[in-house]
Image (cartoon, rainbow, N blue to C red; front, side, top):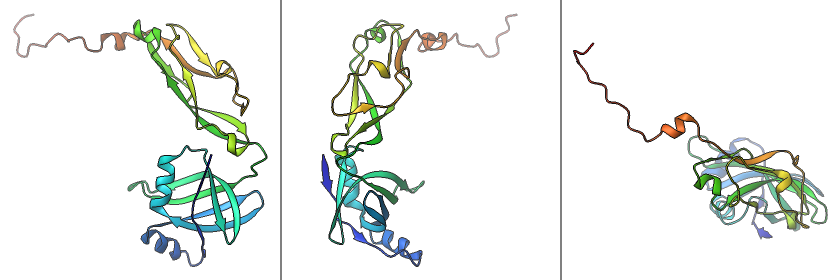
Length: 202
């Protein structure tokens, strides 16, 4: 899957130009990687925010840089700590016929039988590394935990195989498990004995 993003090449000096772009509602960025020199660009902040909202993290973003079509993946996004506004983006240019490795989100689906019987679901791994051509990168990997009973666990090796991509993460890595609740968790919700202030009992 790919989407288009309209970008413009930008100047890098003076540094104050980046702040000027941000005040104009644009985001300074850079593109580097396959078959492209490191190129400073900018684009409309609102348009890119919409692209991020409506597409998966591994979506291929196609841009035209001075007449040259460049297929990219978002490599790094920097946001303002206080306003959460986009400050800078790094794009990695990719070869659509060669495999690349990226992090892909794990999404747990279903309600575990172990949780229904009083256990606690513990998720230990939230992403895995996958290798695929850019157009075959998965949006996420769903893990059905419906049959996960108390004491059971799911590892990376248990993930379903897919011809479109290869999972690189060590198969022994544990994704999730259903464990017995701790004493603190078991007592949650129980009313504590009220302390009588000023009692004369000894």
